[in-house]
Amino acid sequence: MTDLQTKSDAPEITAVYDAVIVGAGFAGMYMLHKLRGLGFTARVYDTAGGVGGTWYWNRYPGARCDVKSVDYSFSFDPELELEWEWSEKYSTQPEILRYANYVADRYELWPDMQFETRIQASKWDGSRWIVTTDQGDVISAQHLIMAVGTLSTPKLPEVPGINTFAGEKYQTSKWPHEGVDFTGKRVAVFGTGSSAFQSIPIIAAQATHTTVFQRTPNFSMPAGNRPLDGSEQAIKANYPEYRQAARESFFGVPIAGDRVSAFDVSEEERNRTFQAGWDDGNLVGLIGAYNDILFDKAANDFAADFIRDKIRETVKDPGVADILCPFNHPVGTKRPCLDTNYYDTFNKPNVDLVDLRKTQITEITPTAIRTTDGDVECDAIVFATGFDAMTGSLVSVDVEGVGGLTLKDDWEHGPMTYLGVAVAGFPNFHTVTGPQSPSVLSNMMVSIEQHVDWIADAMTYLRDHGLTTMEATPEAQEAWVVHSTELADATLYPMANSWYMGANVPGKPRVFLPYIGGCGPYRDKCNEVAANDYEGFKLS
Ligand code: NA7
Image (cartoon, rainbow, N blue to C red):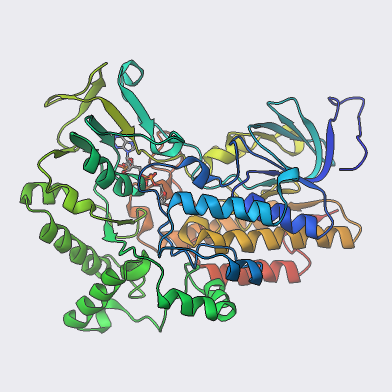
């Protein structure tokens, strides 16, 4: 921190930094480490009581990453990546949180992080950001870096009477730190996304009775989780090349071989390939198997039918299997899931599935979920109902840019960014894995590292050239938004009512939020902008 500064027409400044970083997840931690190493002053703020972001909050039973642990880990320090040992193919939430704390310890990040502190507002005063917190801090910062995560503003369902329920209520995204024991309880679960797919088998193993309320069936594949084996050790032995391949890949995870059209192979070969992807247990095993699965509905149907057949093979009651089979969205256009015994759970006699397409919930009473088919009495409700994705946490801070324009108003009809990392009218405002960047369509660790490095390089460039401010031009931003939208429109993604499209939040504009151009090409574009003296930015 430099000397405290005050301005006669502004609130009293309590601290001055080169950068305020919002969020102490992996993005915020690496951003702090990177900036400190370059000689910048920075401070991280987070509402949580510790580091980890998503992994701090989402402590529900079965919570686990569905990107392999050797991929979902930092690559910026060769010593760190070799000294840390993951224990399983897919890491559990507690293990990832231990890793986050290990990183904070190892790089001595704690003194520059402030917890249980909410950034409430941030106003551009013409040359710097004036950032205020709910703890009374008023900070002057040259740069405001939003490392707020993409799935961090929880979304509860709008059901009448939700607050009248007298039993236990839980949200997967705000799970009690001490855990929950459902033994002897009748449990209702809302939602069938990743959090539900992971938690339901474990909840159902404890509870007396479990009722799942399904609005939309989703595609899932078995995770095939296991202790780490020789294949991962081989990756670690070859980490530099592997990490580089991840950076250049489409999803931030290397996929071997050249991909052809699903129509270029025989049905037998296609099914062998899908079976291999299924057996390998990874998110891109099917959607990444052929180059047209995400672009051509007929190609996608091959993969969708393959999964639907698996569901019908597993679930003994054909009526229940039918309800569990996705029918109106192509595979991959809603975030697919990886599970452990999800479909098999519906063979248990004490597990029920309510199809909300046929049965409506009318209200929640103090003791039951009331539906058009009667009351479902329960002792506990678990809401696994998702998030106001990608934009929710950014607009929840009252960000005011040039001329009093707020981010919320600016994005009223959907987010507009340049490269998913900057916004016209908001100088020195940086969004790590923001909308219109690969973010949620990629291995987040790869995208986080790329954005952090890029932002740090840009700040260094400004400093080295005696400049203080960078702001995306409206023209560059518009071209990026058009390009991003055109790419999305060429895919099957807009066919789904997904959170990728903002469709899970009433009133949210229907636009495709992430960038579907692939991690590697996106990285090249960002590097090109930097190499051309930050083309598309006004520097001053
Ligand atoms: P998701 O994937 O957004 O899933 C939320 C689920 O909750 C989804 O199935 C929703 O159905 C369902 N939902 C939402 N509102 C309701 C109501 N009112 N009634 C019943 N069901 C409802 O969130 P997750 O936490 O599971 O996963 C988030 C990400 O974490 C995941 O994508 C991975 O990136 C990891 P819908 O499909 O909207 O009809």
